[in-house]
Amino acid sequence: MELALSGGTLPSPHEAVVFQTVSDGAILLHTREEVYYGLNAVAVRIWQLLPESSDLDDLCSRLGAEYPDVEPAMLRDDVTELLADLQRSGLVVPRE
Amino acid sequence: MSVRAAGRDATPRRRDLRSAPSDPAPAPGAEPAPTAAPAPVAAGRVSLLRAQWYLLRARVSVLITPRGRLLAEPPARRGIAGAESTAMGIWRAQHAARIIDRAARFWPMTPTCLMRTIALERLLRRDGVVGAVVRIGVRVRGARPQMHAWLEIGGVAIGDPAEVTATFTPLHDFTAARDA
Image (tube, rainbow over the protein chains, first blue to last red):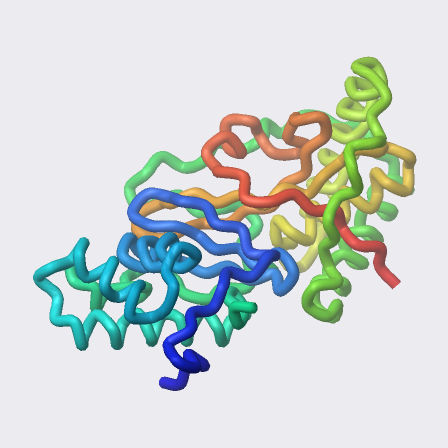
């Protein structure tokens, strides 16, 4: 699974994406692409940490602090995979 | 909680807004969603044919319009000049919605909520009823989110019972883009 994380740089949420929490997760609605995307509780945390994290290491470190029982390598794989999915769907764009 | 579950639970992943069903199905074992009472509607043959025409155009639009061109951002609040015009617009819109629903019964396939809403919005716009927005909302039934589209004027749901639309959390407002 490839993700354009050059130097661990994180993408940013697309400006046309609406985020709305629902029970046990959240919905992302891309208002231009007319698609929506379901996030579970962990993915919601990743989405929320995205703007405030400086890079992938920082995001994984913050998330790891909330889920100390998870292997760091597995956590990083999951974050990378989720961000790749979001990028493929146009929900995030490269950070300027 | 395993992070491995991130984005991979029963929640559907990428879904197309255009495939949202006509009437959101209730969760298994749940009470069925209340439906609009079959209010009598005085609709002549011309009105029904016109409603069918708008439904057909909405269906074609949903099928062939490129992504990003079916729905548009609503203009800045402009249309409704005052309470009286709002009330009149809502009354006319509710009447038109009943005609659209009646026309849809003669269709070989049930139009989706988005088709029905687009048809109604365009018909009202053509008739000079302004201020209508296509509202997209979400609710969770069971483990799955359900998306729904409906029309609102001045905060009043048109064609859908308020007790049903109240179960959805609004996500975004659109207008139907003009069709070709």
